[in-house]
Image 1: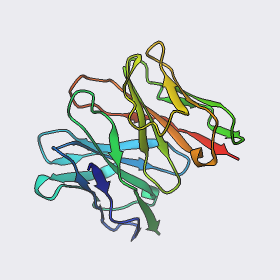
Image 2: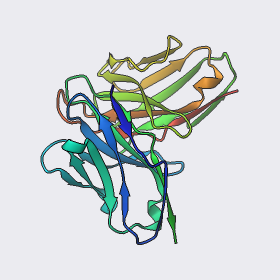
Image 3: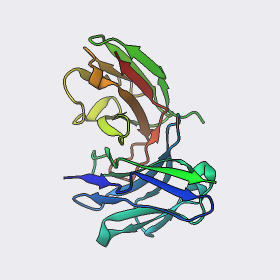
Length: 115
Length: 116
């Protein structure tokens, strides 16, 4: 079955500390991979995506993610967290074939940032 | 440019009533998606349109849910005989809709539906 697992429901970090949010997926083939962020009262905003090529992808707001095929993982990282990064983060996967465009989502990781 | 817009932003209705939720995609996007997000959960896929036709409606939970996109732009999600369990945020997204290629979905702010 296709699924996305975000093992950490809630994470708290201090401002300026580094961050890694985990994402593992189960899919029949290598999917397209996405990270979105959702702030309170805001819509889902795309942080970054992996389609092909270099497995380390850069996104907005200083975020990056690394696709590891052998581990079926797509972890999100940021070297130094800012207070404004506090939000809900979602990992999602999508199919590559024809009409298989629906995204399958993890439950999300809620990030709190201490001053 | 303008992003995906959804109306209304909030909808409160009574159990058993009919509701319509509207989505206006990004201009030029041929693909449109509906998702539902319950509290504390990730979005759950409902239906995907390519142009005017529903390419994948496998996520619609039952026959009370129906969606249309008659002119290949604006879409309406229709829910009949609403139930309290339908309460959620309904998200709409659109994408360019490249056939068989990578595609990025852009989301609207959502409609929060509350069924009393």
